[in-house]
Amino acid sequence: DQQVKQNSPSLSVQEGRISILNCDYTNSMFDYFLWYKKYPAEGPTFLISISSIKDKNEDGRFTVFLNKSAKHLSLHIVPSQPGDSAVYFCAASVDVQANNLFFGTGTRLTVIP
Amino acid sequence: DTGVSQNPRHKITKRGQNVTFRCDPISEHNRLYWYRQTLGQGPEFLTYFQNEAQLEKSRLLSDRFSAERPKGSFSTLEIQRTEQGDSAMYLCASSLVVPGQRIFGPGTRLTVL
Image (spheres, each protein chain N blue to C red):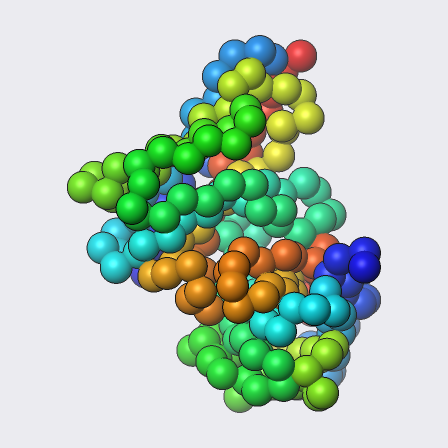
């Protein structure tokens, strides 16, 4: 039962353009959402998070948008850089202190120079 | 502190053998988590500790799996009588209770022949 879904396994974007990664979830109890980036042979690295009281959170080139009614969130990277090429995981939990974090299956982003 | 470390990084074993992995978390983090990631999937929660107490175990953690965190510092994950289906990346992460953002280690890749 996949409660967090990333329906695009891969995405290719030209350097300098916007990358948009999407994530859908099914559990309406989820209240806290995170994006992780993973390079080969490394563990996932925390990128950005958002709680359900907000619909947008921005950190430099990275912005996460949350649409609770649609149970959808997205990560925007502007401008995209070749170093952003990695697998991006969306994750969700019922609150910021929850021990069980549910991950999506990941989207492999390739930024083409 | 150099982050979360895991040893070994790779383990190849024959079916039926026992294996043990070690995780050294960030020293001031009191929460420690184990996740399993199979090919094409996101990390799946296995268990977590707050200090030395194991507070939750996923249904994915069969009786052949046992985890310990003596003295609330490093943790070990043991798999007895390994099966080919146990082949996966085993990730460890640690965090403070607040905030709940986990720092992941590089993982131990297990291959069961």
